[in-house]
Length: 287
Image (cartoon, rainbow, N blue to C red):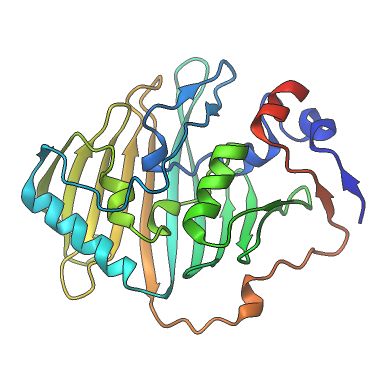
């Protein structure tokens, strides 16, 4: 398999942005929206993340105590799980130059084994990708182009996700729930929050919570019962033209998937090409 320099295929694959950012661009991290700047081409300049900020996160003054308690219970439940899988049915807006919103969809299947294994299969209207973290490297594969890129990262999921965001400007789909402290990740930039009500998602009784941050509003539905898993997430990008939304409906939670170690290893498909994963600063220079 030949190695292709990323900068040489930018125009052929994805004009005006990096390939890795484009194949994962509709994966909004709630924690990363605070303080990010939009470039002229519409991509986000990565903000510096404090990977320890989530630990011991405190309730924001504007967050209702009941909403905080429900969100914290969900976070504690996910934190206590050593391994889990779930499916996310995704819908997201893109805003055309004339202001018209176009709705796209996708399905993502996420598999997590803490502390250092992760796999996300993403099949959508715009792209089909696979993300695999084996405890040493993260590999991103684009099925349509049959190319993949590999980055050396720290050995745990939290630091690996932060590294690919900080260094390469890449968001991994629905990764807010992969961190060791999901509650801390979600609450750290919240300015207000309250309980909207108790509303079902796909027939499952759930607590409906609403939060606001400087640049986004977000809502989350958390199952009411002994398994307080997130059932739905809606993010509104209120500071961007047209206030586009991202909606993830979560289902098929399995906390005993018994996945093999081999499942978290990437095997290059036949005929695929490896491309270089350039840091964000080098990507900007090459462009």
